[in-house]
Amino acid sequence: MAAIFWLMILVPVVWSVITDPAPGFGRSKAASRNLACEQLNEDAVRRRYPGTLEEVSSRGDFVDIRTMACGARIMAYDERPVRDGLLLTALQERAADIAQKVIAQPDAAGRTWLVEAFYPDPKVATKLAFAVKAALVERQQKVSDRVPTLAAGDVLVLGATPPVRAYPLACARYQAEGSLAADDTLLMITLTDPRDVTLSVGRCTAGEWQWI
Amino acid sequence: MCQWVAALALGLLASGCSVVVYQPLMGLQEPVLADLQQANLSGTQVLLSCAAADAVDARRLCQRLEPLFSNQGAVVRTQSDAPDEGVAPLPVDLRVELVGTQVEEEGGTGSAAMAYMFLNLLPLSRESTFVQDVTVRDGQGFLLASRRLEGRLIEHFGVAYWVMTHLLNWVARGPAEQIGEQASKADMSRDLYGQLCQTVIAAQVRQRAFLLSAGGG
Image 1 (cartoon, each protein chain N blue to C red):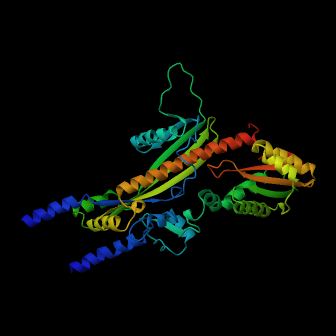
Image 2 (cartoon, helix red, strand yellow):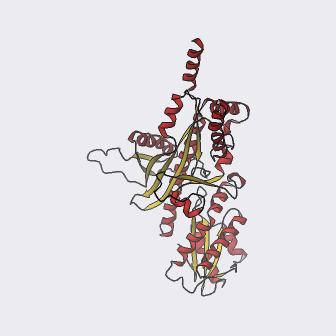
Image 3 (cartoon, one colour):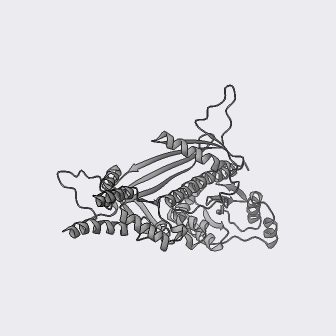
């Protein structure tokens, strides 16, 4: 009888401990950290996971239900460099934010957008530029995959110029060499500071440089 | 009689055995990008303001953050610091506001009472979620960064859980994987203070980006 009593107490407890997303017997700290968990109230659970909760009885339910929804992260935190991971985890939101800022410009209508991203890792730069182009297309903007070019001498001079002066200078050179058409605007996306993933966006239109 | 006294003494001794586990939730599980050993906030005038349901907790948080920012080169003041009479208020570059809330959830004090009542033989647990809202504004009140950091603390009662945890800590877990109150405190402090610093650094970077876009260099 005592054994049954202890089993009735222990089995649900052991089960809840093993399935709990917190570190413990069933999960290491690293594994727990790589879960994307959020606390949800009853309304949120019913909206996002319909059918998982029983319907409230007609007499009302006096239990305050809170639950935790966890999903595995697509990429674990230690699988790629920290900065790349932080940037790519919220890439869509960052690209949408940039696109929103760009189309909010007073002369945005009818322009063709060319996008270039400057980031230490060229693969991440390509992904960033692609995401911004996709976000602009989603907002019914005209986007070109054309890459404006500069002469070798210009590249050498720009490489030795401080970034604050290099962007306006590059913009002027693009215009002088005819790399940009009259309705083209080149967007340049850069990492503002290596200590954070804040991105700065500048635009080059008709030889004039402007940070957005 | 002796057996009963021994059992009671053992039970009372065991009633202090609980295991605290910390789980980082929103924001706290992210890695920190900035190197906090560097002078990230060199010369930045930071005004700190902390609020929580418990005023002592709020004051303690501000007291702990002050050296953390100072060590990175910031000049830190807390909101409660009364300005000297007749002296013009010092300029502020960043206003950091922290609001902490602790949400008591499953178990609560009832679980602890039950655990002590049954001499810690029953496997019970209580958990709470804490939320730290951090907002960083510039000297004029313009919002630069805002984040919500959320974590969960679970306290497991029961001698069996305590013994198993300590056995695994001793046999199978490395220093970084240890579970217990001390390890939970250390992990939580590292995550919380790291993310708070990262948020302030992000705000400073954004402030510079705004200056750049406004043509201020």
